[in-house]
Image (cartoon, rainbow, N blue to C red; front, side):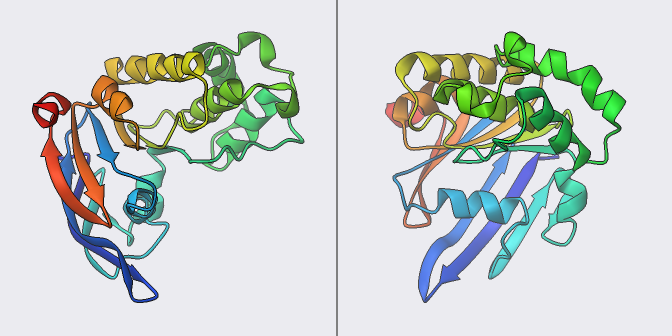
Length: 223
């Protein structure tokens, strides 16, 4: 069974087709990419797949659940790294993870047991009590990634995870994503960086104006 199966997905805003008949499937344990310029419809496609936006037509199955009808059940086993960090500035790094874990109905004791491991994974083991305002952009991005793993998801959606980061910070994020894939997680990634797609993705689609214009492995598409 595909981790994500999308068939003839369509979404229009103000008469403008933002997603225009997209179809693709994501195999479990792989990294799948949606590559395209800004405004291509990548973020809208992710929101549709998560059941956060209702499609005009088409069918979506996420982790075996029909979307958007069973979106809440599907999202219980999914992690999301949004395009812009939305960490709570009033909380420390550890408190951000704790509060987020509660949204999944996890017990405080279980979340607290996972926090050291999550901060260590993010390279922030010494920052548990640090305020968000004291973190660099790369640190905030890694904390947002750690937060997406608080419920130990099967599938992680990442919306342009390295946009705005310097080269060193990008490489750190890439390293963490490769670790997740090696651990058997399914990654679904939007990006407009060709090199990012080449390094991380097993397969990808290139989209523009909401339409699929190419599909395959990075190596095949480059060839």
